[in-house]
Each structure stands twice: as structure tokens, then as C-alpha cells.
Image 1 (cartoon, rainbow, N blue to C red):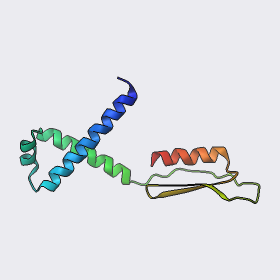
Image 2: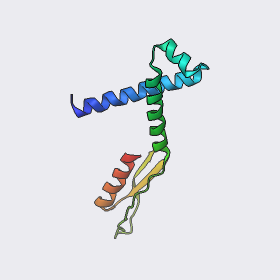
Image 3: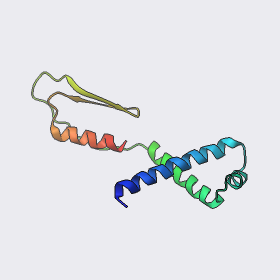
Length: 111
């Protein structure tokens, strides 16, 4: 199986289990009762709950990366690209150094 297909399969499992965990938590039933009604192994439920919660926690943690900007030599520094993703914003100005642009895009990909 290709790596891309494995990653897609993994993302599908994560999405499925996130949905199941949300359904269980919103059902008003105990985990044991919900799992029994849905035919889900209780140990598997807790394994996935731990994994989903850890992933959510990791997404909430701040990540810092050092970017050393290179000042443009021309005086016409208008914004060429403005990127907004998940509460993060980055402006790339005309004449920006390619290495800086690459670093910023690499950091944004992690977010």
C-alpha cells in the first residue's frame, strides 16, 4: 500500500473515531453502555479517545520558529501576498527574499 494511501486511511480513521467519541460524549450514556449499544470494544474506544485528545492538545500548543527577514533594498515594499490560515496571518512583501518566503511557507504548513 502506498504511503499516500496509508496516510489517507489514517486520516479517515482519526475522523471516524473523533466522530464516534463526540457522539458518545453527547449521548448522555456511560462509555460502557454506549460501546455495548454500538458494538464497539470499550478498550478500543479508550485507546482512540486518548489518541484524539493528544492530537487536539498538540494542535493547541504554540509552535515557534526562527525567521530571519532580509530587508528589501527598494522603497516600494507593498504586500504581494497575504495568507490567513487558522488564526495565523502572514504578509509577504514585493521583493521578499526567496529563502524567507520558503521559511514562512514551511512554518505555515506546520500550522
